[in-house]
Image 1 (spheres, helix red, strand yellow):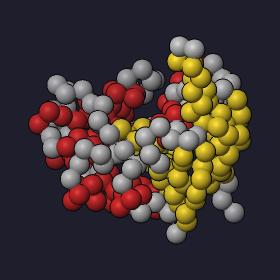
Image 2 (cartoon, one colour):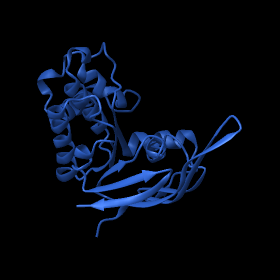
Image 3 (cartoon, one colour):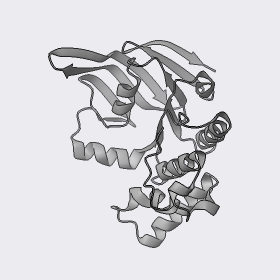
Image 4 (spheres, helix red, strand yellow):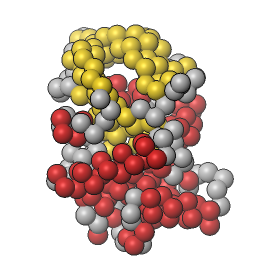
Length: 229
């Protein structure tokens, strides 16, 4: 029986903009099992980004509980949250978030720069991560010499460097054409099925969401529908 890697219990998030309160999340409860592949969908303003920021320990809920890998993390301080992000979570963004004048290899090594891993081990781990996304032959190219699809693969390799239990992908194919999007989604599928990495992805594209085994739909800060394959 698979264990829950994420449990959300009545999560609420309220922002104050001037004198106006915005209820971005209005009571989200959901469980994600180890090895799940979940897509989060919904229109702009539905709460997708807010939920992803909380899942990624980049923000805290106003109330409710977020249990990640057995630990209640929603009330931890910033330093502890940063440690959890580094140890357990890999991030993949729509805009890649790479340093343009450095090589693919150097970008992938970034998460280990402030760790105790020595230089040789760091390079070996980064090269292995690049190999896992099919970019061994491009490791010494600067990222501004790479195509959009290759840059996203560098970003995925970087997300893999600390052997995360969870990858959070925010519109990972938003800047890519359909063929390249399929290549990226095939990598995600392989990581999920072969390495058993739990995948959570925000997308507004139904054909991309179809790669996930579960889909939830947000509207006005609430989950209004779930689909399972």
